[in-house]
Image 1 (cartoon, helix red, strand yellow):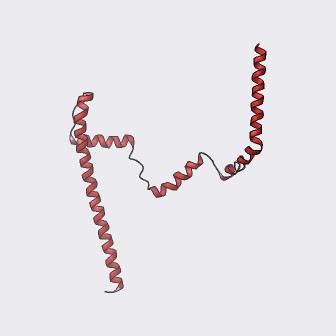
Image 2 (cartoon, one colour):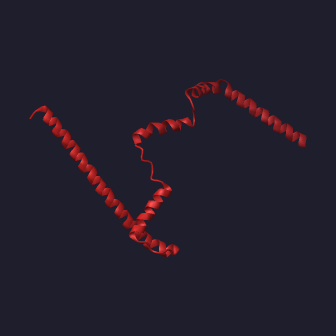
Image 3 (cartoon, helix red, strand yellow):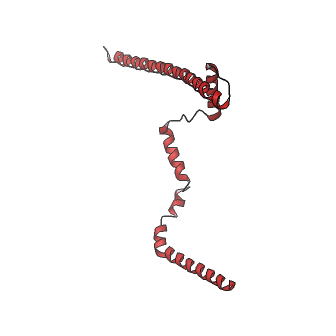
Length: 140
């Protein structure tokens, strides 16, 4: 066999197997949808008439209710995890820091707190205590 023939044979084989996979996935999807309607119908007919006094429903009505619920509540997020991962990660950090320049403002915070912050905080506490004491003395 020539290399070209093997190449085309492998390509055809690849597309045929891919076609069969898609076909069987479609068949399984259809079976699951039909099964979901059947299960939903039986759950509705078992629970809703007794609990809420509603009437029983048929198979096609149950599929219609499932479809209606999907329209009302949404079909979900169908984007792939790989393409969405980086954007979610980036947006999560945006809540805390909008840009690198804003983040760079905080790089010396620990050193500031060690040198000046603690002392400034203690001065603030003393000032508050004096004001409270001064306010208590005026009341008396």
